[in-house]
Image 1 (spheres, helix red, strand yellow):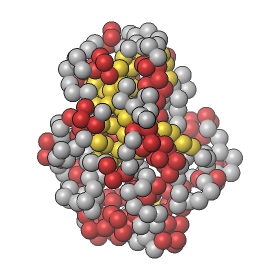
Image 2 (cartoon, rainbow, N blue to C red):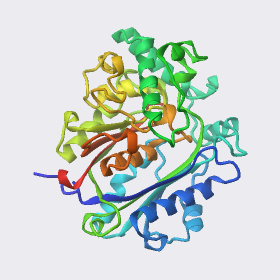
Image 3 (cartoon, helix red, strand yellow):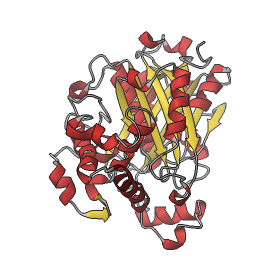
Image 4 (cartoon, rainbow, N blue to C red):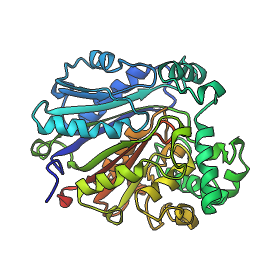
Length: 389
């Protein structure tokens, strides 16, 4: 029996703004631009938005100024903050609110000028520590999230024989997708040798194993399925969504090689009525190259420990056996602090057939996995075309 929420809501509009360097604009201004673009894509106006889901790294009451700036008075608000997975996690509350008739159109949106803004990375890190104290790690003052992900990468290499070359395959594949995407920020050639030879950030991760630092804003609009059919673009239905979180600090993760995606994935797949083998395109939160390997394993695309061998020989690059991170991902396309919203946007565009040179032919089912914190929160979504209902 199908889950009662399966396919009851749909993404009807997507938009983004301020990719790369948004100098001269605030994060609220590029968020507004993205919101307007998503509404225009759906063929509606901001006056039609009566639900809002948004959050920010540096503002705990972010939904209030967003609603004020957009000039909306939402009947449904979700400002849950789980890091980069938040905008995938926002799907389920929005689905339930729409299905219950509490609201009619939910705008999910995010904006950041972390590259060009006056708040530098040190200030952002200080704000994060003030709002989110981690008693066993913050006293050692890790400069970025990289050391935490490096721990996971080193453990995976030790336990399963994963190699630096296999991690580099992830970065090279992302770059090859980015070269097909005119909106991607890094489009020059990249080889495995170049990844290995690039500046070390936190052993075993080099700078090319790490996501970009960019500006950017994204937004998408959700409505009930019955209304979605009458709007401007083909609806992309939400077939499943689930979130799991097991820890905050990386030192509290029970097994550095197993993430909560191993829980969120099966629950989302069960709601959607699919398995991993049914996915035509996969969008994974690749803040670091180890993420992609871990999530491919935890979501069931390959057995645990086989992720490195799974991605070898261009398997997730254009022309490979599984299209992964088709816009170039956080490694080569865009990464403005939190990347999750761009996973959903790219998946929707792929299923609508709008991706030009990087389009995956015949794509009907997309799997999205958002990651927040230091492998702390995982949110998995399954999106599908009308043919999947």
